[in-house]
Each structure stands twice: as C-alpha cells, then as structure tokens.
Image (cartoon, rainbow over all chains, first blue to last red; front, side, top):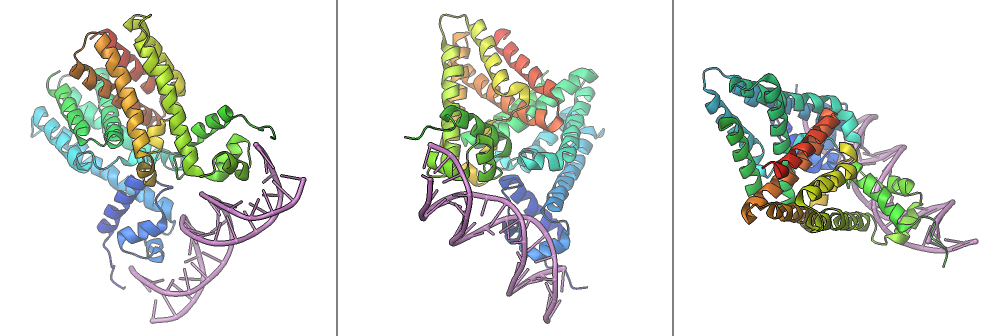
Length: 187
Length: 187
DNA sequence: GTCTATAGCTAGATAGAC
DNA sequence: GTCTATCTAGCTATAGAC
C-alpha cells in the first residue's frame, strides 16, 4: 500500500474548518481539496460518496468531541461541579477560538443541507443539551429546571456566535461564556 | 412602458424567503427566478448587478422592517413600555413565523457572503440592539444595563432560531420569546 | 418589461495512468 | 494512494427579439 500523504486527523481538521466557515453549499470541492493538501481525486478516494460523506464525517468527528470534551468532563465525579463547569466553558472557548470560529450546526443547517444532516444535527444538539442538563442536576436543579437551563445554555452559545460575528466583537462571546458560567455557579 | 408582471413588493417577499432559507451561495438564480415568478433575464432587469444586488436589497428591506416594526414601535410614547414590549415580541413572533423562518443575518453571514454584506449586517444588528436598548432605558435601566440586556435579547433570538431548527421544536422559540418578555417586564 | 436562447464558467464527480 | 485530465450538469450573467 502506498503511504497516505496526509493523515486522517489532519484531513478532518481541515474539513471541519472549511465546512464551518463556508457552510455546505459554500464549500467547494476545489477548496476542500486545497485546504486538506490533497487533489480532488484523492479526496474522493478517502470519501467515495463525495462531499456529503465529508460533511457527515465532520459531524461525526465533532460529535465525538462533545462526548469526550463536554459530556465526559461535565460528568467527572472526581471533580467538583464547579470545577467541571469552569473546565467545560474553557473547552468551549478554545473550540470556537474565542468566538472567531462559527458552529457546525449553524453552518450545516441552511437550505438543502438541513435536510441532508438533520438527524446528525438533532443528535449533536441533544448531546450538548444532555451534557449541560447533567451538570445542572449535579448542582441541585430538578430535571426539568436543568433541562430548561441546558437549552438556554445552547441557545446562548449559538446566538452569541452569530452576534459576535455580525458585530465583529469577540467580547460578546466572552461575556456570554462568563454569564453562562455564573448561571450555574451563582444560581 | 410595459407594465410590471410582478410588483416590487412581491418580488422582495419572495427574495427574502429564498435567501433566508437557502443562504447566499445556496440560493441559485434559477430558484430566485422561479420563486418570484419571473424569468432570470427579467430578474436581471430589476437587479442589474445580479444576485449580490438582490441580497443587498433584501437586507435593506428588512432593515426598514426593523425601523418600522421594532424601533418606532418600541419608542412609541403613546403606549406604556409594557404594551410596547408585548407588541414588539408579537411582531418578532410573526416575522419569524413562530420560529419556522430563520434570520437573514444568519443566512447571509457564512463564507463569502459575510464579507460581501458585513456592513449591512453590522448595521442591521445594531438597529435591533438599539431598539431594545431604548425600551430598557424607558423601563428604568441604566444605559449600560440596557445595552447589555439588548445584546442578550438579540443573542437569545438568534440562538433560539438555530436551536429551534436543529431540534425541530417550535416550542423552543416560543419559550424564548416569553423569557425575553419576562426579562423586561419582571426585572 | 419580459422573454428565449446561449455564452462562459465552475461545480461535483470519474477514468485511468503511475 | 495520489495524480492529471476530463465529463456533464449546473451556475451566473448577457444578447437580442418582442
């Protein structure tokens, strides 16, 4: 077997970045190829079903990120709930690069791509919500209070990413993260 | 002069709908033409600079909507601040069709279109924020409290539209609107 | 002002050499 | 596994008849 020129993980990182910033229809195969450092035909060798398979893989990869960096972290009983919240918020800050990066859910839920990926988007959002619901319960909220607060948390993250971009002001994202943290720590 | 087959206002309504749901790159001229009921060449007669001019016109049209349906309404001194908030929220509910429609800022701030329309998006978001800032001040908040609350309001609207779509649950949008209303009426 | 027809290009996807 | 070359369909945009 001929060696891979670019490793899978590097390809995923590039695809994530391009789909996030350009959306599904906006990300052309030419650009996806350039950003990964492969030629178009080589990308098709990795993803035989083409662009849709690439976006599906991106959603899958980011779903695993949520499992590992949010869900597990927020449930870690070796840490206090306060520590967990602070670390979770820090992971989110890093993942969105302080608000410079947009969210894949937003990028892939416009137009045709909403229908193509609705199952994965729904499942991904549910994971976010469940992760925050768990920590709410650990902090003493009832199940329904925790559910509502978790949905609010996701809403604020999504909304602040949009407004941060539109207003070109990273402070908006940071303020929102602080506000979310305070919601959990100073109820 | 030959009579217009389709009136300007009808064209705008169709363009708004298509750009909102498909985004900029996702909205093809073929579809824009079909949805307006004109042929492509006729659309170019109305918008000689093409697709970009259509999207610009859409942003301008929706900016006027904010001026007339939010800014003016929220400042109307013939009504109590409570009445104004309730009516403003009702206008927003109607405009987004209870959460079924997405927001133009979100639709036009991905990929290339972010650069094309950043000035208009920034101005449009500023109008939203100023409208809500004014009502906050009328309700007794300080300028900086009102500013922060207005930004939060926009964040919640944007975020709830995203999450409503992703979770396919209109109740999320409605709950958020109620929550926003309560923030202003029961501080 | 609206239309048919089409130019010129780029999109996603494939064939086949190495 | 990666590449160059290429296919076809769709794209934005325009020309010119009515």
